[in-house]
Structure formats: structure tokens, C-alpha cells
Length: 102
Image (cartoon, rainbow, N blue to C red):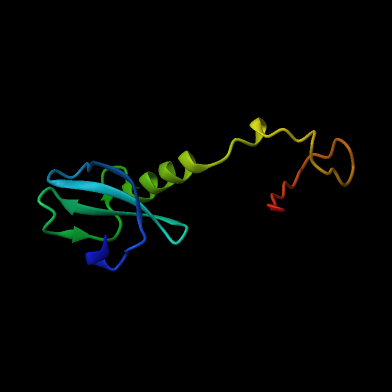
């Protein structure tokens, strides 16, 4: 990743692309998830959106969304009974704030 000026990037996935001869590479860089493409020999890189024209689907955006969804925290698994509750009990919307006092 240093060669393309993204030295601190973390590779999240490398999968075959729907386009023959290319693989889809998902990375996290500076807190942002990005997707780009490379040929199998790693001689060429392609940055931008891959659009499937039959359905006009943005495959790059779809893959990026899947990677982001994989990283989401399931809020139903967080024990809220030990937190500080402020506001109306039974409110329809909740805000959860995480802090690290250490």
C-alpha cells in the first residue's frame, strides 16, 4: 500500500471482481473504507466505480456498504443497564455515547 501512497491502510478484503481479470480490494485508511480494483498480476490499479449496466448497479458502492455493515456494532448486544440514563423513560429514540475514562 506504500507504493500507492496509502501506507497506513488496513486491507479488509480481496475478492474476485465481477469483471474478469480484476480483483476487488477493500481497505480502511484514516477511518474511511474504500474499494479499488487491481489486475491479477498487480500491474494495474483502477480507482472509481464499477457499474453493472444491465441493472445500473454501482458494484463498488455495494461492496463498500457490505464492508461498512460488517463493522457496525449491534446495539441490541450492548448492556445499557450499567449506563447513565437521562430523559424520558420509554422514549422512541435513544442516543448512546461511549467514553473511555482511563
